[in-house]
Image (cartoon, rainbow, N blue to C red; front, side, top):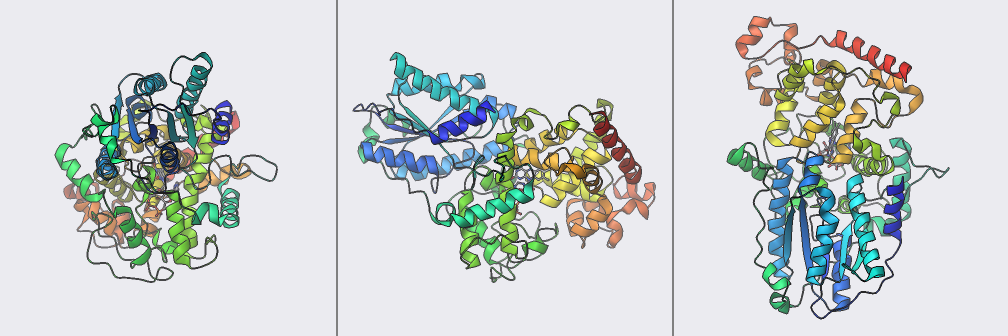
Length: 569
Ligand code: FAD
């Protein structure tokens, strides 16, 4: 709670200290892991404007904090994605005579404030501007930087520049929405209604307005005593300890599927909003495939058909923007700005009865889970949101590692689970419906602790984001933000039957056939539960296996485990 207050304090309180000008001084924008873009970036836009006012140059700084990567189980794929984006941004910034410097912080994560303040002092920087990160350790780090700068101003020792942090990662930031009683929302639906209302009553602030562009430095910056040499700084191609496990082959797949560069995010959004919904072409990057048929955004486009399309894993029905949003290559405001524009209305569509409205509601989940993380930081410290389930559920012991491994390898004998897990390993992405199915399977059918699944996802996902991933896992494990009185019903509802889910989300069976080529010869609906019609020997001959658990027995066991846990709390 203290951290949460501190965060609000530094987002609201203007640092009243004067900027201490010096002839060779400069302004520093510190980019984070979630705001790697030049357009519509609050702190960067502000830093750029300040630099102009002061007639000083701007530096774009990025710190690779090994400690943060480790403690958040950051996927090497996501780090590779960031490095590629930074190399792209470096080129764009050099065209504006702005250097981009990266620092790799090898020592402990809590050393970042000291190391950074020493550098700023050594360089003679006059100000530091960054966007707020809502994770606990990041809030601690930023609070310490503020305190160090304040203390230095009082004692006259150390770096005395101006420090400001900005709200940017969410459309509506944590703490901006409260219930009528002034309490934080703990359930999504009322939060989402308040979210839409707030946006619609402040359309100019949230949707129309755009942060100003980055303004070029004076070309003489290339001769600046400190900044000049930084123009030669190259972006590393890998961070030691976080290399891609699959080497060049994996790098090739990632670059093909998740490109970076000019017009990429715009292209992905246009494809989603302006081209026809169609069956998925698996292993296509979001931008490629056959020439897409132009469609009416409100009718037959992917977004227009989102209500149905989003639930079909054999259709290309969602935006595929998550990796770009999680790393901030696109601003979240830009997403809803586009939805607002194509809806042609006077407000952001809020209802579930149109594809565009439904999509905006999905984007709201991202803000909701960041709000949950900032308000109840325990969720990021391996604690359940619902404390009733803290240490009370009897999870499977480590003897069940084999089952966990079968889940990881996509060898559980449940085709939809296995297809999704293999897709994750190959592409660094999994469809939302599949994330729900595999998470339910791990936590309910195998009764394996959700934290193991959460960690594995973070290590594999390109869009891995602590708040959304944790929120998704806790939702599926029924330990998260649910209306409390009905917890038993919710647990029962969230024990997905893999076979019937499979029929719903992949009615054509094409998703399974693509990811499990050994089952390609099964043309009928039997593909959803082949063990029902085929013997163990027949399955083994195909190269597949029998289910590792009996779903209906596992279901009964899970309900008992949760009931016992709730009763013992
Ligand atoms: P679209 O359907 O086009 O949605 C647009 C955007 O809205 C997404 O890109 C995402 O930013 C946001 N969004 C949609 N649904 C959710 C949701 N339920 N929670 C939070 N944001 C949402 N999403 C992540 O971005 N990072 C994660 O690490 C992550 N882990 C998840 C783990 C589990 C167990 C579950 C059930 C869900 C998780 N999600 C996560 C949410 C969701 O699965 C992905 O955001 C979505 O699949 C991304 O595909 P898309 O961009 O095509 O989504």
